[in-house]
Image (cartoon, rainbow, N blue to C red; front, side):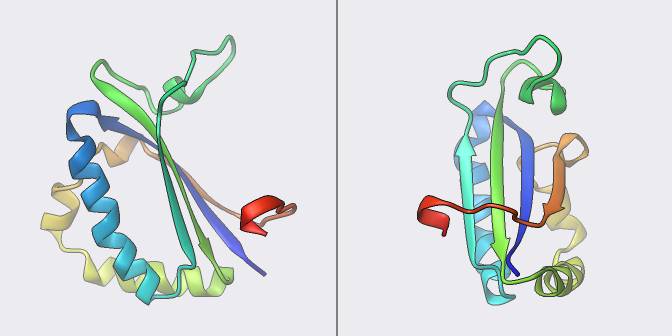
Length: 120
């Protein structure tokens, strides 16, 4: 069964191109390890909410934009093996050069329960 990883990320607005390049670079590695697709969305209409919202979920700071992304996998086992391989592939320099604050990233793995439209 397909498996999803979802991310909400605070990215410095001035580093938009760096972030896109970062995702493109690592997508090729994840794809080689079995990922099926990657979608990245740059925040365009992300309003503040009354109870909670994307902005508070990542403690968005001035000069940052909320980014959402999701990656699809053929199954959870493939995803888990890929992340294990990536742990050894990413150097400390790679981690330090990320164009966003990974400590404020929200992420998780999900089992799809309904797929309609293009993703179907």
